[in-house]
Amino acid sequence: MFNDVGPLELVTLAVLAVLVFGPDKLPKAIQDVMRTIRKIREFSESAKHDIRSELGPEFKDFEFEDLNPKTFLRKQLDNEDLGLKEIRNGFDLKKEMAEVTDAVHSRDTDSRSRNGGGRVDMTKRPEDIGRDERPPFDADAT
Image 1 (tube, helix red, strand yellow):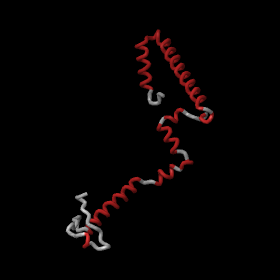
Image 2 (cartoon, rainbow, N blue to C red):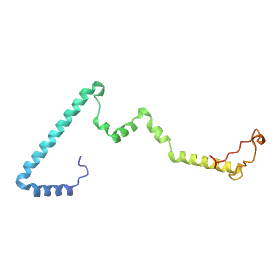
Image 3 (cartoon, helix red, strand yellow):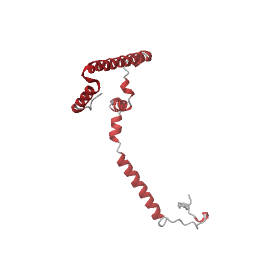
Image 4 (cartoon, rainbow, N blue to C red):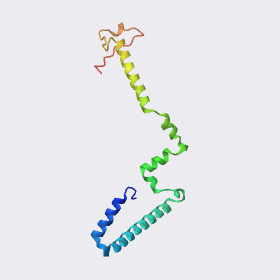
């Protein structure tokens, strides 16, 4: 809970507590805070127990930490049964995108070189087009 609180922050908090509550009332304030924290923990544990009992025996190993999306994903990605590590390690997004980009650019340059630099001869009539020849395509018209 307080993993990132250093010793200097703890000393600062202690000095502030002494200044705010005074040395006479500080032990009583600490006891009240501890009692409140204990009651909140008991309430939380009883709520967890009630939820587990209502869910039934098939959810006896259910952990509420799994509801955190980061924990859930980490747990699922580490699960060897699903084979997600092989999928994740076998898929290189940069390589795939480079291949797609190269394919698009090479097809674009090939079609331009075939069509005379991207120009389409729209003067041909449909009867004049041979069997192996593609009909004219005007990229600006679509």
